[in-house]
Length: 273
Ligand SMILES: O=P(O)(O)OC[C@H]1O[C@H](O)[C@H](O)[C@@H](O)[C@@H]1O
Image (cartoon, rainbow, N blue to C red):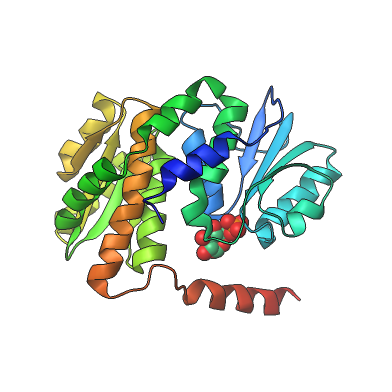
């Protein structure tokens, strides 16, 4: 799963990507959408599609309802659309396609979704991303976090590395079936930090980009993980994978198996049809 990410990144590095310039809106859901959010620390992505020169849709399956809906809106608005997908309905729409290998869980396939974004938007960072991957080091970081999490609910905070905070939360939720949350600095400084008067059941972690993030950390007594660039981010994303699988094992959960997400999908489809 996460052990062979160096191989997955090597595979992703061989993908041909189109040239992208100007204002970019990037979106997707879950393990696909988070690739955009991680990327936003390194490229100023728009929060709104209206002013975009290029719309990038990321969906591993290519069948995610919300993602297809936005692609349809972007098509009607006459936008240039680039899709990163393994196939599905998305690959049949009038978009430029970056086709990746399918058949796996979206979250395990993160390298195939993220590296094309890097290659399109910040190609000079490609090698750094690949160099960040290191299974032994990622497992060591995961082990440290695991011992601190036991019996507590993790909450991941960040300012510019918010995508990374969200990724940790998602991995713990989906693989370990365990609650985890994330919050954005500085917003949490105006509300959430007061909750720590009764927060002994929480384990706060701050992904720090500098002293301002560490003010939040000091107020909630968080573990601080300092990040100096995309190489650290790359390593930590692999760590999030290991951490969530280790936690799943401790809790007797199967990382591959999902229950509530597919059930929710069915219920939404029933209401939508
Ligand atoms: O990534 P996609 O194929 O677009 O699917 C979007 C999301 O759908 C589900 O909720 C899965 O559990 C997520 O892991 C996935 O990322």
